[in-house]
Image 1 (cartoon, helix red, strand yellow):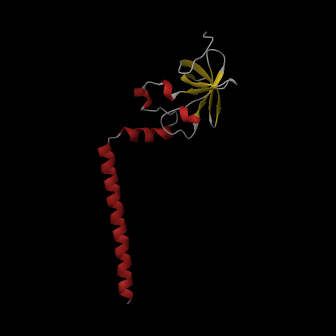
Image 2 (image 1 turned 90 degrees about the horizontal axis):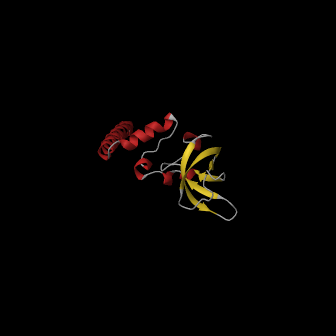
Length: 138
């Protein structure tokens, strides 16, 4: 059991509590640190419970330690770059968002162009019917 932590060190910990702003993690030294919600994943985290639950084992990086004993931790910075690019949220509501991030730029552009063309077509139809209505009333 390591006796001292150092800034930049990567260690295993256990989630001991979840709060709206982050997760508390018990470290091997017995001390507790906080993983702020912005340090859970590279993607935007709306609800931390989508990613973590109590008693989860997590790998964290020590970001800072202040004299009062507060320890700032990061899960996302402890992961290798390749893993960081594909977040793995727990609930199925995020699966669609994750799948869309794996589609190519060309596919996204094609879908955008099709949606845009459909909207323009609807707008033209709507505008033409209004013009026809005004012209007939004169």
